[in-house]
Amino acid sequence: QVRLVESGGGLVQPGESLRLSCAVSGFTLDDRAVGWYRQAPGKEREGVSCISTYDGNTYYADSVKDRFTISGDKAKNTVYLQMNNLSPEDTAVYYCGGGCPNPEYWGQGIQVTVSS
Image (cartoon, rainbow, N blue to C red):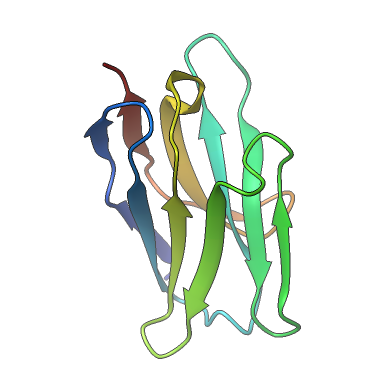
């Protein structure tokens, strides 16, 4: 059974940082790429970042380049998204997805709110 469980969200002020975690079970990080996606109120879900540990490739949306860093820990089968210099425009529900750009599996989502 495949499960993706997000953690690490919350409320922060503009300019602050958060690290999201996605604990994966049911497949290994070398089996398929894992990505982070987000959906802001009134907007469609968008891809934020993706990592494929089997070839080392990463992808970032233009809106998060140079601020967000995705990484994977194979021993823990967990993918992280380090988010720096957060802005109110980053406020959204963040989802972990098994597969990029069209995940076959989804986590339940976690709220990230950036507000002063």
